[in-house]
Structures are given as structure tokens and as C-alpha cells.
Image (tube, each protein chain N blue to C red):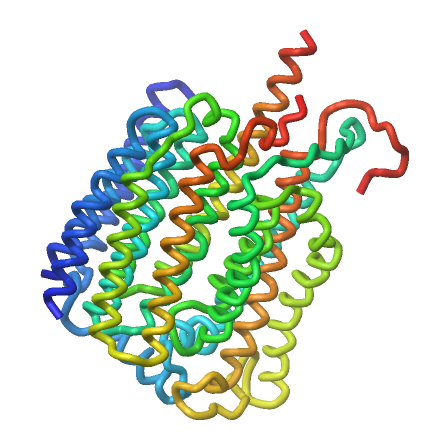
Length: 153
Length: 251
Length: 86
């Protein structure tokens, strides 16, 4: 079980550490991208922790985060649209990194759990996470064009 | 009181708190290990009541009365917000302009809305088995509905969100908790006593009253969050300062 | 190994909490707050309190940002109206 724990620690330190730095400093564009990336990283960390502690029910945290995390980023994309339209953040590389990390982690966990209902749940979480992350970064990069912020004044 | 005296009072108070905190920390059990007198008893009690998630057993069975208090705090807080953020006489309602949203985001929101709802209901229903329960699931359900505001616009959200009904739902959820408690008083020994059959360990119907109380809290929290966000959204999107144009529009 | 993980998550919580206090602009602060929520959720899970972690995730990831940003928008709109009126 230590391998999973090491993986979780490495992902947390190497993925979430820079996220905290990215969200705490710099222009607004970089901060929203960091928030979106952080959601993906933490979701994967939750999956790895569930495997490390041998507690399949901890996977529910990853499920809730895969559902609500992208929704949170969409909230920022929508309500900060006015501030983001001048220079919408494109983060193709970061999105691709997050998506491939999700594929690797989910695939490894599916191999470890074997076929069954747990695998279906893992695949669902992986799918939701990747789709949510891609859509959220699309939304940040101009998903809410000018006027979308319902600014009538 | 002079500034000097006030600083003395502050310093004395701060020192007292610091001494108490240090005294408390010294007597704390060691971090992350050793015996857990409360934990062991709680686990034994939860297992004897066929509740797999000990936290749910503590929240909704062993200390269900505390949870009634917490639920009432949320109820009262939302009630206060509703009163504070109501439309006053010198404010008017301006319908917001429809939003322009990328089709991909719109599609995502439309697909995710039922999925997120289902996820929230799953978290509520499995409260007695796995991490989660009424509060967490209720918040997920309420957030799910607001995907419609994010992915479409405010008018679409208002369409599926008759605030009045959610206010009633909020009150019903709160009342249902008390009703289950009174049922425990009538059918068993005490208020909120776990009187229902306990069921088979680790199944959806296990735990006696725990799933029922979870459902009541889930309903209360979901409706309360919807009502809360409705007031915030009204203020942020619709209500503007200025004279009322239509009479009788106040609510 | 568990201690290392606890230490990492504690450090991340401390760092993001400090950043949340240091941020002055409310909308940026809301972003830092969301990341702080994620760090806290990891810490709770590492300390074997997944129920609390789940509460944190449910409230922190979408609900709190929505409430903060709606309040910011209301205040900004009012400010803009008053500026325009003068």
C-alpha cells in the first residue's frame, strides 16, 4: 500500500504546491487556471488516498469533487467574465497534463481493483473529471463572451 | 476607559486564554495514536445499531439532538438572510439580459445537472454506509440546480426554482426531524431514540432512524441553500436601487 | 510515510491560508479560498476524517465562491451606479 501513499504524496507536493503558488500570486488569468488545475490534482490525490488506505468509500470524495470542482471553475469563468475578456487564459498544455494524469491514475486504479462495480465508478469519476476540466478551461478561454456577465449597466 | 487601561485588560485576557490553552494542550492525548476512549465507545455503539458509518451514527443517533441544533442554526441563518436581503421599497426589479454562453459549456451544464443531482441524492442515501450524509448531499443537490444559472441564464433557473416551494421544503425538512424525534419519544424511551428496526449491517436500509434523519436534513439543507442563493442572485442580478415602477411587487 | 503526507498537507494548508489572508481583492481572495478548501479537504482525509472533508468539498468548491462573487458583483454594481449618478 505504500506505493499508493508515495504516489499521493508526490502528486500532492509536485502538483498542488505549484497550484497554491499560482493562485496566490500573479494576474487573475493565471489564478483561475491554477484553481482549475488544483481541482483535478486534488481529485486524483483523493483517488490515490482511497487506494492507499484501502477504503473504497473514500472514492466518494473524488466523485463529489469531479462533479462540483468544474462547476466551481465555471462560477469564476461566468462571474469574472468581464475581468477575463481582455486576455482570456489559454492553458492547453496544463489541461492536457491534468487529463493525462487522470487517465494514468484511473487506469492504474482500475488495474488494481479488477473488474466490477468499483471499476465502473472509477471510470465514471475519471470521465467526469477529464470532461469537466476540459470544459472549464474552455470556459475560461472565452466560454462567456462579452455581455455574458449580464452586465446591463 | 483610557487606551492604556484597555490595553491592560486586553493583555490580561490574552494571557489568561494563553495559559488555559497551554494547560489544555499539555493534557491532550498524543497526536495520531494511543487509546481513544470516546472513539472506542462510539464505534461499539454504532456497530450495535448496525450503522456502518460511525460518524453518521454519532451525528444522527448517539448525538442526534446536537444535529437538531445545527440544523436549526442553518434554518435560522437562512431565515435571517431572507429578511435582510428582501426587496425594499426603494429598490426595483430589472429582468436581467439573457447571457451569451459557448455551446460546449451549455451542453456540459445540461448533461451535468441530472448527474450532479443523482450524485447528491446518492451521497444523502448512503450517509449511513459511507462518508457523506444529509448535509453534504443537500449542498450537492442545491449546487446542481444552479448549474442552470452557470450554463444557461437566470431566467432558466427561475423556471425550475419556485422559491416559495423551496421555502416550504426547508420548513418541512426541519419539521420532519422533530417529528422523527417525537416518534422516538412516543414509541420508545426518549426524544430522538432510535426505535426503528435496525436492518442488516451495511445495507441501504440499515441504521434504524439514521437514514430518515439523513433524508430530513438533506431536504432541509438543499432547500435552505437554494433559498439562500435565490436571495443572493436576486440582489446581484435583478434588484437595483431606484423607485419602484410597479406597485405591489414587494415580497 | 503517513507522517510525510500529513506534513505536506499541513504545510499546504498553512501556505494557502496565509495567501488567503494576504489577498486584498475579494474576487482573487475567493480563488485562494477555493484552493484553501481543497487543501483542507486533503488534510481532513489524511487525518481519516472523510466526512468533514466531504463537507468542505461540497461547500468550498462551488457554493462559497458563488456567494462571494455574487456579493462582489452587487457591491460593484452599486458603486458603478453611484459613480455614474454623480
